[in-house]
Length: 281
Length: 132
View 1: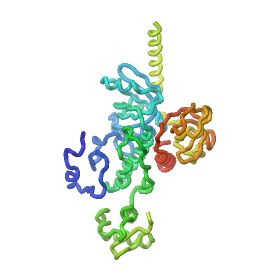
View 2: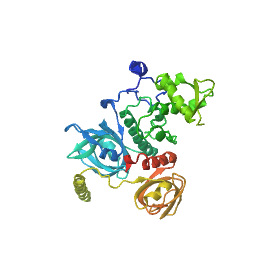
View 3: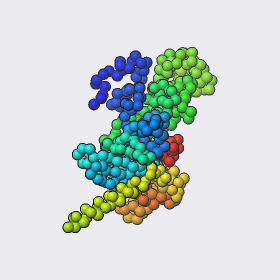
View 4: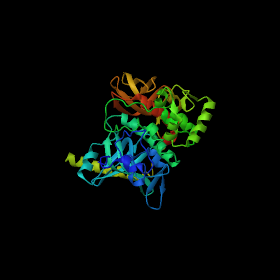
């Protein structure tokens, strides 16, 4: 596939100013910082999100969700009103947030074999291309797979929320390292019926992203000091490390440290350069 | 002979089905099913909801189950389901403790209730716009 065996991602992107030192990517996809539309892949969405998507350009059937062009999506829901013909199979997909039309063209044998297994009332994952047909939005599916492990249903909705937050924060110009602080437990691929339960998404998900999207330096410093790894360090974190990791000049860090200290949220430890959060984590 | 008649009936139904499909102008988000646990159920009485319960007792008409936030829920209209299995129920919330089934799916014997519970909270809270 297109894994990082072909090129060394870290050195290839090192010149661009992105560093992956702190967060290691557990996913198997190449960490591409440039989220160009062509390489976006399948975007997890709910039918409600699709129904609210606007269309960009002229006739160019480019859908816009969260301010980003979306072409291919993945949806999980129940099949209803499946109608099979020689040329195509059409059905309604109901994911609990809405119902939408889907169509699968019978191009190859594989298409009909896969669709034969699908019955009304079955939970499936549909991967497809969003299209507009006679004013109505439709999903042209190229993959329809029955769900066997139902944690996949839970996972899909978490995935939708996660993707929504990620595109929203990127749209507001946060540094690319930010989203990775929360996503490691959410992006482990579990689409193929793995057994056992996944760890619950931690409550970090709603706590990390403030309502207006932009995080002040103060908040970033506090967040960094409140991470378990920072709390685990007895002598605290040196302000140079904060400056390096958060990419702020030392003076800015010191300003934030001073105000946080005044608020009683952090305290200095062995000297005036080392700080720890007062919360026990 | 019967085989041919059945085939004709099937084709007729398919065509009728296609016609229904084309009347379906656009997407229908008019009757979503709200993700609920026991705590959230009471906020949606009378509405269409969906919940996963861990079956404790099943006597054909009334099923008693544990919600994903560890409270007891009554589900009406489920057929006999095996104890200790997880069932997703989609239906109308009749009271703050019971749901009348419209559709149900057997989610098997293992299910991550904690994650589902968090989805319930997120889908009713901060991320309601993605769902309802």
